[in-house]
Image: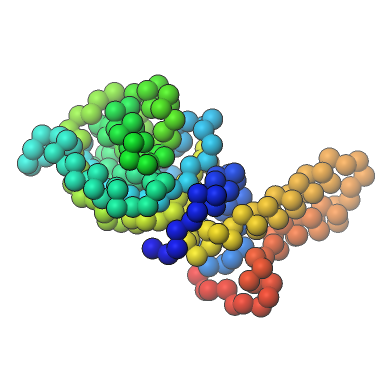
Length: 246
């Protein structure tokens, strides 16, 4: 993992929604524009919460059938040791690997409070969550594929490995940003530079919005404004540094 962000840098990233974070990442041209974010299968459960930012701790679960050994997830508290090995703030990312994910819910109000006590700010799963009122009251953000009333046979099969949720591959230690639009993985090497670019993009978008609301604005003016948004570049590219090829 590269150099960790300070608490102030984390808070700054939380002041932006995922859309402008996505726009800012695109301006660096280090990955394809259709990569790095969730595209299907998960949704934000608490839209009124502020954006979530944290480092990923990962695991895989099953819930449809009993485990070969043991009875439920409680025998796999070694998962907690993996979570604590990831820098705070943490996001627990859970891939349900059943053929039909979400029979049982791993994330409920008890685990939400346990994870909060461990420095986690939220969880992401293609599986299910339950006890939503209790989770919401705790302030713990959750992105999930569905809602379930039961734990069924939830048990952890692996942890500390790459997982896939919402068609996004997430590795332990990845920096995750999420809000009502979904989740996005922030390249570590860009994290500290993103706020300045995001602010520039927001300023240019506001200018176009104001132009659109102004009587008499011409198509040429609007077109120029849109081009300025699309042409935003980070300082490193303005100085002639060659972008890494996707």
